[in-house]
Amino acid sequence: MRKLKHEEIPRLSTNTLAIATKHPVTVLVDNVRSLYNVGAIFRTSDAARIEHLVLAGITGTPNNRGLHKTALGAQDMVAWSYAKDGAVCAKGLKNKGYTIAALEITTSPMLTTDVTRSMFPLCLVVGNELVGVHDDLIALADVALEIPLYGAKQSLNVAVAYGIAIFDIVRAYRQGAGLPVRPDDIPAPTPPPRR
Amino acid sequence: MRKLKHEEIPRLSTNTLAIATKHPVTVLVDNVRSLYNVGAIFRTSDAARIEHLVLAGITGTPNNRGLHKTALGAQDMVAWSYAKDGAVCAKGLKNKGYTIAALEITTSPMLTTDVTRSMFPLCLVVGNELVGVHDDLIALADVALEIPLYGAKQSLNVAVAYGIAIFDIVRAYRQGAGLPVRPDDIPAPTPPPRR
Image 1: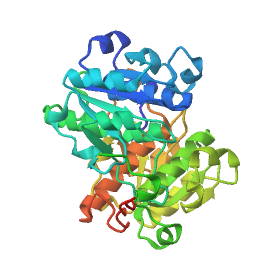
Image 2: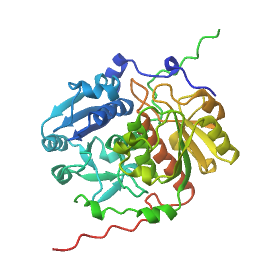
Image 3: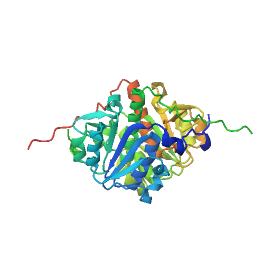
Image 4: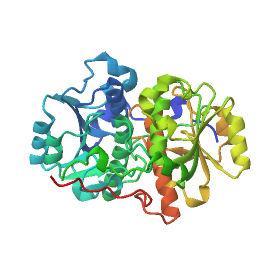
């Protein structure tokens, strides 16, 4: 086997992505302090093809060029908005029928791999690097999702935890909706020209 | 529900972790440039309880304090070593019966979720942020693992991709070995004292 060249890797064009069906997941990034983390979250959000990213509280937005370094262009691919108060935003989504799912270790744990089809549309809430998801948002949450941790430190970087959770959630959605794991609307790679 | 307090979250003590059974996965981090990424990889490796982390080529080690900022102590929890040449290290592991699995987009793709029990012990290879896994290591690899990407950018931050892959791999191992998803050797949280 060999590595695919950059131009061989199947991908959506920006125009096709704009009209492609998104996974019915909105992500609420509440009070995340590090622009590096927000940039990485943008990049992961493009790859997971979520419908919308809400940046709330102190979370930086693409207006701050500091996050472009880790977003690497994904800030232009993912629909986003800013909300001053994450809880107000979550309430609005809840009223629209979204399941509010906090990525947090709580008294009522559910694994990210146990998300079911009935939980969509879903709003995944990720919180601050130090204190996690704010209590206001925990109070609003329908479920709390967690990643099984086997070590001594018992926490993950927020961008890494988000990556694990969102890919589990997207997998659950596609499985429930009878969609193949691999995207079926991205053109297959073309073999390189013979020399 | 409510968030668990820090002291309520079940975790292994450093001493118990040292003698706990690890997941039979060695991770080879080859030529990763960013100390932020290496630190996050340490943190994820503790959480995934892998047996060993090999830092190869230009990848920074815990001797460089720059990675402590994102490793947050996990550099003291995960067994690690440095290898000048990642390919030599991978050859050695291959001779010991490890399946060499490159996290890379190749002509022979397999999803991280399709890892099976017969593939353990497994060496997961992650590569450089810009050029990916080196061709020398692709040539040695038994399989190439990939994460299904649905977006326009078609790549993930290396620490995020590693997080998604290693948790899929650990899940596959535990499922194959008949182990529960949640760690069964970490004491349950004690309820907070009544006031």
